Amino acid sequence: MRPPGGAQIGSRSLLGALALVVLGLLAWELRWVLLILFGAVVLAVALDEPTTLLMRRCRLKRPAALLLVLLLLIGLGLGLAQVLLPELAEQVRQLGLLIPAVAARLAELSARVNWLPDLNTSVSSLGNWEKLQPIGGQLLGLAGGAANSTVQLLLMALLAVLFSLDPTSHRQLVIALTPRFWRRRMEALLDECREALGGWLAGMTLSAITVFLLTWGGLALLGVPLALLSALVCGLLTFVPTIGPTAATLLPLAVALLVSPATVLKVLVLRLVLQNGEAFLLTPLLLRRTVNLLPTVALMAQLSLGALLGLPGLLLALPLVVVLQVICEEVIVREMMDRWG
Image 1 (cartoon, one colour):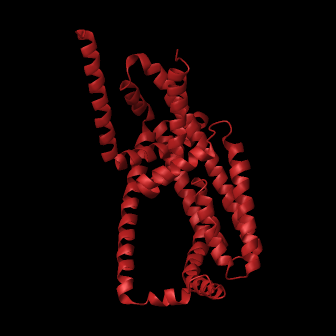
Image 2 (cartoon, helix red, strand yellow):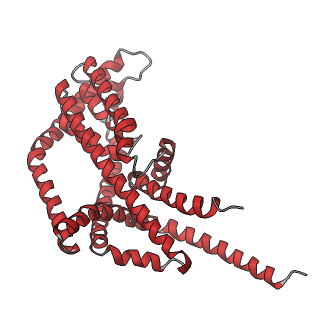
Image 3 (cartoon, helix red, strand yellow):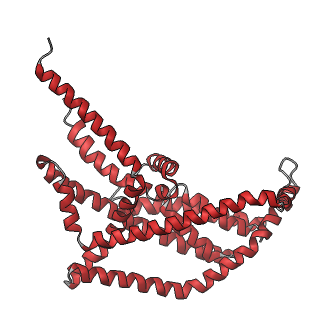
């Protein structure tokens, strides 16, 4: 005969398993809400770093310091827009004009290789209205997705400002939802997650700025058109390691194709040097005190979240892995594995 205590333990285990399944299903249904929430936390940490610095140096209250940071960011953005936006807009216009020239150049090169398909026939076949209709539908879907992403970004920014206005209350809310015996550990865990995330943001920002400036200067010295636009794309995609820099190289290579094959080779060498220097020298140097991600873990996280959540998941994969790594080290390794037996 089974003792009553064993029946209680079995029922509790069953209820616990069912609760985990329900929580998992609920999290999956609310995945976009959770993604926006985590993105807002990342932006809030980015805003909190200069806000805290101003509070310490200038002895300002948090709302005034946060307002000053936002005004400085807006002023910096407007200043950069006045300096770079006219040239950037002109290069975007030139890109629209160069796309047919790049396609013609590729068709000319493919005509010299027997095993490549005839690009001239493929491009001319797109003139058929029946074949253009699916492309129009895809463009409309892309426009709808862009509008949805814009709304999500605005909501994310609003939540980030609200988090930055009163981080203590939100922190206390998370701690209050933790069992009493583990609340001190939760406080330390939140501090470590914030430190790791802030270090990652600072390091990646400096790395992206460095890549942008070096790419811009290198392409300008090589005489490649659209140097500013290509450098801006390369700098922004630095925040998506492994995948981003490789994809960003396609734009300057395509533009360099219009100049000469030798220029293509020079651009490829330039991007390989900068990409490897950033990946193996600059970024590890900037992040050595805060977080150390294995390239395989970073790549698998990007591929997994990109497949599940699309572009937003791909962009937030690395900060999420940074936080999960801290949680795994502090909770799973130290609290469970190190105490086993």
